[in-house]
Length: 329
Image 1 (cartoon, rainbow, N blue to C red):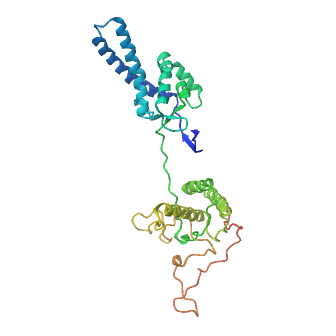
Image 2 (image 1 turned 135 degrees about the vertical axis):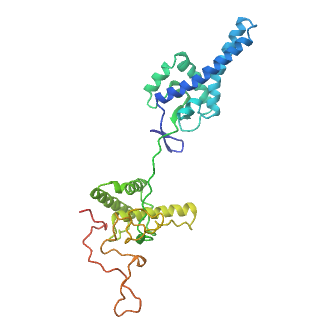
Image 3 (image 1 turned 45 degrees about the vertical axis):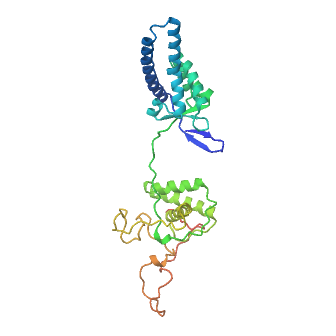
């Protein structure tokens, strides 16, 4: 990966092309150009048979410069750095700042290519490309250009699991402006791979990330909420805010379908609320559960009809750290 910095102080992650792919692209280009040059030379030889030797030599030199120098320069200029060979190999010529090349860049590259590629049969270009840290030949150095790879292996982006419904709306007032992008990336990487980790290691990572997130937001963590569920809920809140800014205030992402419904995730227990995988578990002891997610309870003695307690009765919560997340056993 090559860290190129633009004039706006933006770091570009470009993959410079190395000698094997560049050599294959040049070989394809030369094969096409030499084939065209031979065809044109035979035609010009037959057409200029009646001329004197000096005129025939001038026509030969002109056809050489036109086909083997002028045509590559025109092709790179018009295609913005993508000749036929580079197109087949997934390469492109760009400027040092990552922008498309212009005529002057293609002209310098083509002029130096006569010496590097045709004059020495590619020996100078190979040596310069092997010595250069970014695989550049002399024509690239003098032109201020770089050959990069356009087709890179794609990576599958795993979605972040949705939070449990009983945490919906719990963090709508949380200030997320002080959370750095590096911490968001670490949380996202953990959430997308937590099922692949050892349970003890994953629980310890969740607690550490949740503690860092609480320290950045400055708000105390809710008691009894598992660390992984807390991270999911906060990431979902940030995604909801970003979606609301992008698509309008009326955007509301949906949760997973209930168990047994078409499209419901496999492995979901029917006794759990919709959207809660079995690996999360239910709210911890002492956790406040929204009334909509509470099970039906008997009326409170002496209270009005239909009255229910404000919280689900549970056993006393064990002592927890100040952040509200208990380390794994």
